[in-house]
Image (cartoon, rainbow, N blue to C red; front, side, top):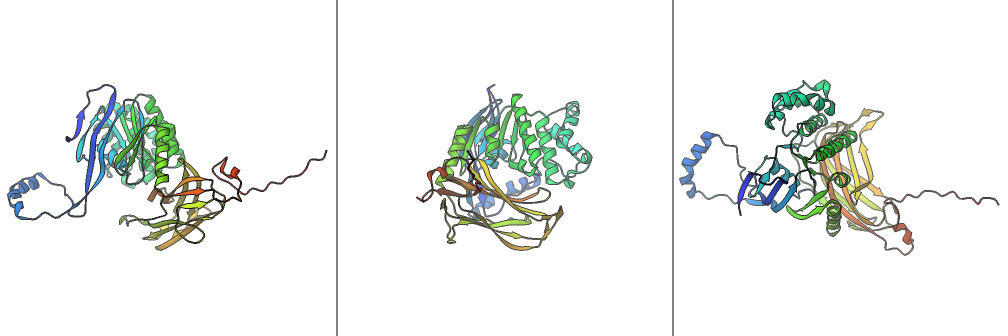
Length: 425
C-alpha cells in the first residue's frame, strides 16, 4: 500500500481525495520525542549499534483503518461516529497536524481548520496578531487580511479584547475568534470539529449559518459533530465511522438512520472512564438500571429508568454545571442539569467524589432507541469532559395494560390532567 501525506490535486471537481488512509498510535512504551538536527546526526551514527539492543514491545492501536472517500468542491460533508471512532484523527490528518501511517490524502486548495481549543493560535500573541499570523499561514497578503479584519472582529464579538494576548481568553472567547478567522479568511476547504460546542447556543447558531454561507460560495466544508440536527440541516452527505473504519458514506438522512441502527445493535448499560490528569473534573462511571437496581439496556414503558453518574472533583470548583441529555434519532428530547448557581451567584463545589442519580418516570419516553450524553463544564462554558452516546438503551411496550396509542405521536409523554365538562344543551 502506498504511504504518504499530501499530494497536489489533478481533478477540478474533487476537493478532497482520501485513499486507503490508516493511522496507528502506539500504546505504552516510550513516546517518540521531537528531534533536533543534532539528534538526527547522533542517532544515525548510533544506528549500527542498535541491533545489539532488543526493542521494547509496543502495542499498536489503529485509530483509522483503510478509509477511502472523495469530496467534491462545494460539498458539505458530515462526519458521524461515537467517541473513539476516528473522527478527530481524520481531521488532524486533513489539517496536516499529523501524518498517516498508510495511504494518501490529496487536497485542492487552502485549508482552514477549527479543531481543539488551543490549536492554531500562539498564546503569547494578541488576537489581532494571531489573525494576521493565521492569514499568513494560509498564504494571504497583508492587504487581503486588512480587508477582512473588521468583519472577523465583528463576527467574533471580542472587540474589547482584540489587543489582549489570547492566553488570557476564556475557551469561549478563543473559539469565537478561531471560528471567525477560519471562516472569513476564505480557505477553499474548511474543517470544523465538535469544538463549536464550547460556545453558547446563539453563537453556535451563528457559526452554523456562516458555514452554510461558506458552502453556498462554492467552498468545501467537513463538519464533525454529535449534533444530528446540525448535521441534518447543514450536510448533503455524511460519513459514518465505526471503530476507525468507514461504515457508510452517502445521503445524510440515510447516514443518520444507519448510525442509529448501529446504536440499537450495540446497546450499553454501564461505562467506566479513564482518569484525565489535566482535568479538574472527571467522570468515572455512568450506568443505567431499572427499579430493581439491576443494570439493563432494555426497559418497558411502564417502568422507571434510573441513570447514575459518578464523578470526581479534583479541586474546589466554582459554578460547576453538569448536564445530561437523552437523544433519539439525532434529536435532543430531554435535557436536565445540576448547576452551582443561585440568584446569579456561583456556588462552590468542594473537592471530592460524587454520585448523582436521575430518575426518568414511567411513560415519559416512548418506544425506541435512546442514547445518553453527559457533559461537565463551568459557568464560563469551559468543558471538563463530554461524552456523547456514552450509553444506549431501548424502551419496548411489553405491557398489555397500556394502549397501543402510547407508541404514537410525540417523543415525550407527560401526565397532563384533562379537565373535561359536558356542555349544556
